[in-house]
Image (cartoon, rainbow, N blue to C red):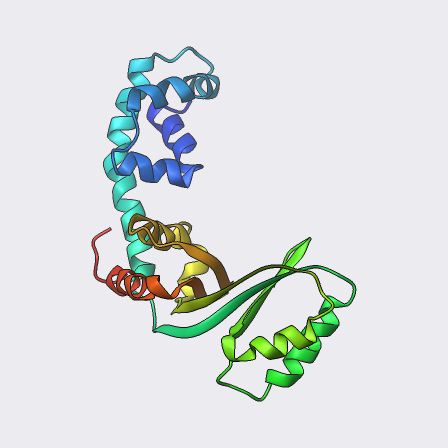
Amino acid sequence: MITISEAVNEIVSRKPFLEETLAGGLINLSSLAREIRLEVSNKLNKDVKHGAIVMALKRLKPTINFQINLRVKKVIGLLGDIIVRSNLADYTYRNSDTLIHCQTRLLEQISSRKEIFYAFSQGIYETTLVLSDTMNDTIADIFKNEMLTYKITNLSSITIKLPEENAQVYGIYYHILKKLAYEGINILEIISTTHEFTVIVNDHDVDSAFSVLKRLKHEDL
């Protein structure tokens, strides 16, 4: 037979961001206890009092706080170089049978030009391209028969090199994006590979965004 504390811990541990709000004291324990009371009671096969669940949540908080900080801080502390690229433009086209051929033509033109920034993301209904704005005329020509649904210029990218451990720790992207959101920085696009994380922001936000990301490695979580 498991205890009330074990049942509460099991429920909370399945919900990472509930863990964080608990650790930060941002959630009303009494309300949370009412929310999970039925689930706790079912796990123990008996009616569990509201007050007992509140006490279990209070005992849980210090442990959660330590575990979250330890996992995330380890990865954040291993963040690599931060690379900034400016003078970018963002294009979004409606997907079509010919769009991929246009992308192939574009890649043929920029494959040997290492100074060009290029990234794309293909969704179910549309595809977004982010490129150096020196390619504006080329894009207009190659994609002239495609349906352009969105375009924005005067953008910058900030790329962070991630350690290998990032794939095994939940909440890393959330932690980075939360810091940027707290500073009122609007993120227009997110581009990621296994070990790189790139945000696209307006030019006027790039200095603030860079400062936030640079401070990450030295902040207490």
